[in-house]
Length: 239
Image (cartoon, rainbow, N blue to C red):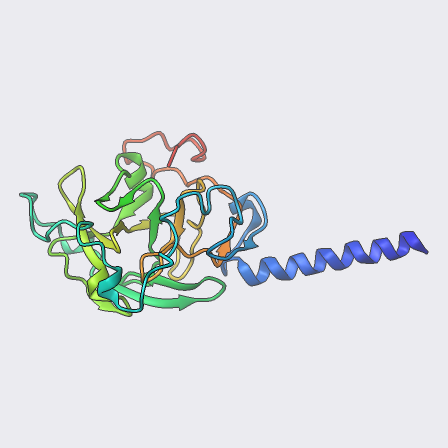
């Protein structure tokens, strides 16, 4: 009798876990993509190693509802500074839209509906991108020519730019440089969440979104023909 009861408890726990994964994971969730099951988390709990290691990574407890009060005045570089040639329209992120997606909640998307990310290896005060070389081929910077994307649901006072190592301008939100992840193949997905324990979906106020934090996963490899060794699964990369 006791073993049977124990068996029922185990089965019940497994069913509950399955529902938790379904409710938290991306729409195209595949356990193999993440190396483990997704697990819910809050902004003040570390659901997985590295998720809240950076004290500046989540929303500032003293932040107010006034966008100007949340702005880091020294975090951005003035748009248009530098002598780099203008980027073609295909390379520019034209729109930042604050919206919500299933299972994750608040996100920022570009004009094509792809979710944007921030990197714990960067800094926001002053703003600086430390994702270059192969990293930038996997995590494509949200670039701009004039620092004036169309904004929907994102306050103008938290949007700025930072000059990258190659001289191009990258959009920032609350000082954090923002990126696309080439592992996201369709709009609205967020397979980049918690990759390497350093990459997180960014919210319209610049905080990392920790509503759902899958187990730490490896980044995809740089695209073939990009001058990188794409034979690896991405596990040898530090970004």
